[in-house]
Amino acid sequence: MTLLILVGSLVIIGLAAYAMYLQVQLRHQKAERQAQAEQLAADLEERREHYRNSIRVLASAIDAEQVTLTEGAIRISMLVSQLNLGEQERTDFQVFFQLTEATAHIPILEEWKKLNTRDKLRYDREREEIEEKYREFVVDAARKVLHKRNEQGGEPLFYPVGKH
Image (cartoon, rainbow, N blue to C red; front, side, top):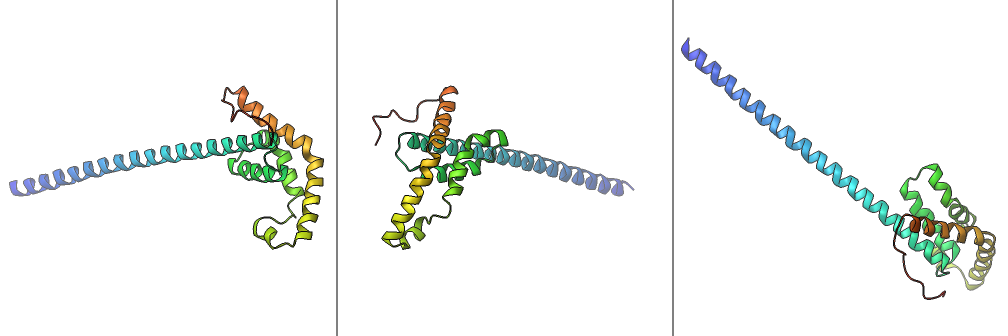
């Protein structure tokens, strides 16, 4: 009988120790998952801030006439799409999407390189006409992006030395 009680006690102690071991493992896993989630959130926020900074740089380049309106609008539209903004904030960027859509039929990158000189000139003229229709709105939107950054107490993106 004593032997049976001793064996039973050892089994209970062994099971209790194993249960405690599993509890510790579970705590470690939860802590590790929490740390991973926090790191993922920090990485996501860092990426979002990088996109926002890129948008400000592009807005500044549009304002300084360092990029075409179409190029700036396409790039800003893509970055804004990655931010998953709410409808209210997204309306600040609507004109960039509109210009991007209005010029979407114009070939870019490899397709552009395949065009002959005459077609490139024709598309350039068409792009410039479309840009002229949107110019005031796009430049105003770019300045609003820059102004919003300055209101939030941010440093200027660069100190312009003149328009190029």
